[in-house]
Image: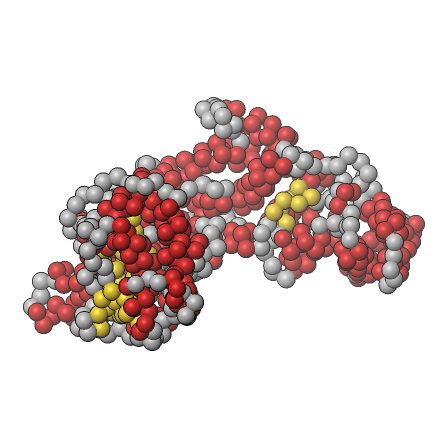
Length: 612
């Protein structure tokens, strides 16, 4: 039984073929923009290509049907190339003497229309209309280009594999006899599972012909052994993909929200190890597949051996994930934009795991604490660099926001690693998916809600907070005068929220609340890192304007519900970093100062004193 075949075919290999568009396919629907994008890509390739590079068109999926090829996927690309060749053939009939044929199961007249593109018939049906539009677009595009381009592009389109000249190729995916074409079409189109790098590499690896030369048994056993090897690779492939579907594993490795075919991450890493192939354009979206295709074809590589190399890459990633120290150091670097490929190179250049960790720590130190313009600063200056950096960071400077976020994230990582007996881990998946970002601990006066909807929500929060039984218990230490003021605030907030109110009325109450719970709110805004922490987007949206005790209550509630809260965010709102905890409902300048100093001490202890 014929197996699926996956090869690269230049356009010149297709010119004598007949293609058949089945009834389950819709008609030609490419827009002017899509046609122009393809022409621009071909032009750019023609102008920049070096021998023996090739431009790779997206896959065309076909199945043999008598003397024709049934087009399961790729009709739009195949038709557009046909129309381009038709245009060029009229200019250079001696060069383009023939072209492949396209016929249609339910639109027989379309075949004749393609052979004789008559604009007068464009309005006869929707297929003619789009085909005619594509033809006009192609004509107009060439009219605006260099007069020599049509000839040059004709050569590029028709160059065969017999020459070293740049050429254009299709990814030719031929379905085996056992495949149901309609089912494959449904999977590719209705199921929204495109033939991306991972799908194509899997098909490339699982071809039965890959395994026939791997066995030395008698003929009757060869087929069984080959089938078992094919099944083994298929099962291991699925197992790796399943492991990567674990968000905790995935978001440790990547910030990408990719949902399907996450194994492509592993394939990309292995493809990098194979080295660059000068035949393949660096920007090609299917570069990973093309690299594996070239590697297997041109280097006489045993597929089982190559699959083992891919598994080794995955096993390294798994080892990092399971090592608590590497998990945090690498995860931090990844979420700060560091390239995983550089981390692999650092591993390869290390003499031991300890040396690898040391180099990762050095990358973090250079990234966070040392001036990128002076990367050769001596390690002895690290302590001063830590203090100088944390003292200079300000939320007011927008350019420092990414730096502040990185310092706050590192504070969480280091705080966890400072306790080697703990098995607690920073949850990178929640950090990514819940969009944890920097926010003021004590809200600034300018954060007063501006619209009536947000003002009403703010009033509800205040009234609900003061009515809470736990809060009443916490506020027992308040004086009678303060308790009376809290009750009056609650009544005024409730009353105001029941009616339409003026901006000035809300502003008056807002000032009263902030004066009571945030007595220093009129002081100069504290934009230092001592008044900043990581908050999730949900809390940010709901409590951005809230006073400190309401934010505190929200964080405690999340923690009670076992919703992930980064360690240092929780510690801040529980005031663990404050040296004198006498006012749990207030965040004062001394709390900010103590918190900032705690960061400095933690970093110095970890990176300097402990000899990290």
